[in-house]
Length: 587
Image (cartoon, rainbow, N blue to C red; front, side, top):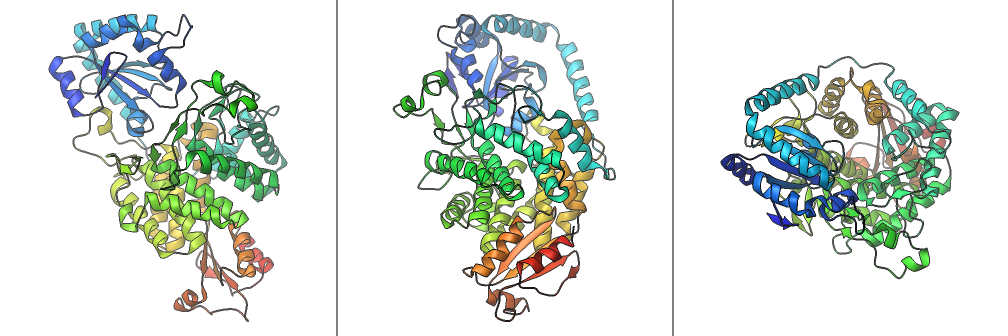
């Protein structure tokens, strides 16, 4: 429990809900984040602003909460499971719950004057309308269950084109990006655009990628002083950002810019990656553990970001939340590996290995991934889909570039964990395993299209590496649950389209045999890694490992490659052009 602004905020848990039941009081749930500017405004206000004086700093608000509510404060980053069920459309979220955890009402930011009336209204409704509340919550629960009911359907053969139509329709041809303002990056949509352009050469897709990637990196959304992307732009032209920087966004965007440097054959995009990584590796990375901090604050933006670059050099940087999040760090590992595949920079690979080793010191430690760490201390929340999936991707990425058995073993353990603990009875992946003592909406399994798509992509990759069909079958079952619903998400379903492409494609398994220090081996690796295919796996074996698999040690004294498409494997080849010819035959 903690106190802030004379409000005794409780933690989400049995104690707070038991208190609400014992005192017969509704719950005030505040969901925010340390990087959230308007969350801080709601807590403390804006100095000199007569409207935004600090909702929770207002004595009348404080007194009403103390007398009539059990207040619970939740950090969105630390409890994504709670946020997924109770968020009211943004941060801060202001939600009112029954002592059983059913939602009575909710908004986002609430001014002090409105909050006073809102608190009085909720108290009156709760005290005098309990029968009506019970009926209403039961009806809402039934409606939600009906709307979230998922039934498997056959894939739409036009899935990718349907999503691309939404991308083209919403593309801002003047400034890049999608929609107007506020404007967010949408890395999944950009990845689909780049991959489809690589396959089709459609000029419109190249325009979408180039204008958007340049718009973000050349405009105000990129910190040209310290490096790194801000979270989003408040303006259509990318000129005025909201100044928080998130590890999640920077990791995803770095991976997209790596892809762009290969697909668009322009070193500019790789330079952006190096700049962003410079900030991440210097300001956000713990030199002892190698793990990355979660975010850098947007507060005091006028006092810091509003100054000239010369003045900024003399000022302390905005607050950095040093909490380590497993999902975001895993995304960062994958971003570092993506850069290593292009540049061969061993220091970058070392950084990826160090960060991953903090998260998963040994394969057996991957069975119960903590969602977050305070310093080096793992926190209680474990086993979330949002953590398992990116960690599985990161393990597969490291397996590709190191060929170390530990990463492959970790990937298999994580894949088995998905299948054993998070697969629902009708297929698809729940965001967390059901728990008999779960409170309120946490007792309701939740299956989200983006999380299921990312998990499916990881399992297709794992199936290709291990030749274990169970993983691909689980991926297919999960994706089919959304076959009738994906189109409603528009370009937000880009990761779904990518996953459907992967699960429907013939597996492409490329095995490179050679000394990793041989320039010829490196050339084969870089070409294979850079080849865009929806269901591709690349392995590199040393000569001894090749012999153990009954493969030749070399091919006429040269490193060589075997390419398998589905169940058909071709004769070994030793040149980049021959390898490319075989891989292109799989398209």
